[in-house]
Length: 138
Length: 127
Image (cartoon, rainbow over all chains, first blue to last red; front, side, top):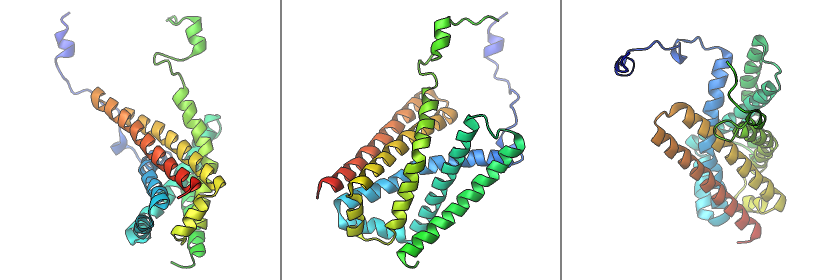
C-alpha cells in the first residue's frame, strides 16, 4: 500500500447538507440569530464604553457621542442594539432551560423559538416606548 | 473497545486541554449574572433618556450605580470573550490566524473593560 494514493489526490469528497439547502426552521433561524446577536453585542460594548468614557472625561466629547446616538443612523443602531440585547437574553434563558434537559422536544423547542423572537421584539418596543416617554417626545 | 483513560483521568474529566467543561461553565455562570445586570443597565438608560452631561454624571457617580455597571461590564465582557472565541474556533481553520484572533479577542475584552472601569472610577472618585 503506498501512502500517496490516500494523501496526494485531492478528490472532491461528499459534504453533508449545509445552510443553503436547509429549509429555515424556527429553531435553526433562532440558533443563527443567537450567534449573530451575540457577535453584534460584542461590538456594541464599544458604544457603552464610549458613553462611559466621555461621561467621565469631556463634556464636548460626551455631547458629540449623544448627538451621534440621537441622529437617525445612531437611533437605528441603538434600536438594533436594544433588540440584540433582548433577543440574546431571551435566547440565553432558553439555552439555560435546555441545559436542564427541559423543553428539548421538537414542538416545544419550536414554540420556544417563536417565543424568543416575539418576546424580543415586544420588549424592544416597550423599552423604546418607555424611554421616549421619559425623554418627553421623539 | 476498552476505554484507555485511567480511572483518575475519568473522574477528573478535564480532557486533553486540561480545562474540561470550564468554558461551558463560565459561559453559563456569566449568562445568569448578565440577566439582572442587563435589566439594570436597560433601566438606567431608560431613566437617563434625554438626560444631559450633568444628569448622566450625577447618576454614574452614585456608588451603587457605579458598582453595578462595573459588574455589568465585567460579566458581559467575560461572557462575550468566551462566545467570540467559540465563533473564531468554529469558523477559522488556519492555526496561526486562529491563535492571533483568539489573542486579539482577549486584548479587546480587557481593553474595553479597563477603559470602562477607569471611567467609572473616575466618575466615582471625582473630577
